[in-house]
Amino acid sequence: MDDIRNLTGMHIDILREIGNIGAGNAATALSTLLNKKIEMAVPRVQIATFAEMMELIGGPEQVVACVYLRIEGEAPGNMFFVLPPEQAERFVRRMIGDDAFSFQGEAHELGCSALQELGNILAGSYLSALADFTQLNLHPSVPALAIDMIGAVLSFGLLELSRVGDYAILIDTAIYDERRPDESINGHFFLLPDPDSFSIIFRALGVDGL
Image (cartoon, rainbow, N blue to C red; front, side, top):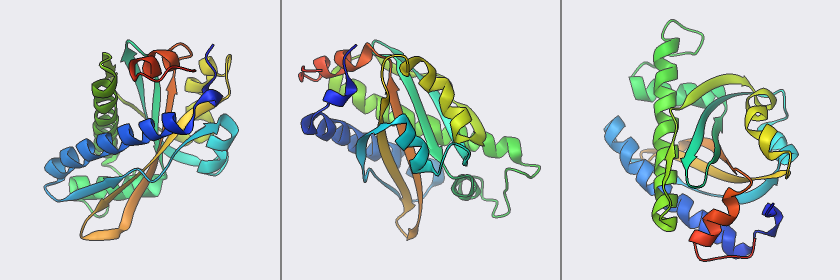
């Protein structure tokens, strides 16, 4: 298997650029959806071990809101968008216009649908940018939502990859209303291409060497 640890600074720069383009596309879609100007940024792209991924969130028992999508097509893999439950609730309140919304309340199903749509927009925008760069056929599955301990929700995607490696690509994402930049919503994308997909992606980008 190609070793993700062989990713160079150039590879990371390419992934960051793809992330920035995807964030721009997602910001446009969210602005239309919420009828207000939404900005997005990709402050960090890095390679993280599975243990580091858990610690970044606060440990394997930390409860998170997680949208999971399977990447289908010529370079399949898994994608997780993870954010703290309180920030997920804040986004849903803005999205549905209910300042009292809680995942524990009666509008739970509506909130879950709104959060799945957020994950769908973000993942779709990122994959669209990646597909444009690589000319590969890539598309996301229907999103699934879980509010559970991070160790439990990530174990599904890590099970297959952990047989051949111990690393994944982390893309931090910050979403904020330009009128309230101090109330940003900060989430983490965990991109876990299947073992054979890394070389396919970077070969398509014209940067072999993995």
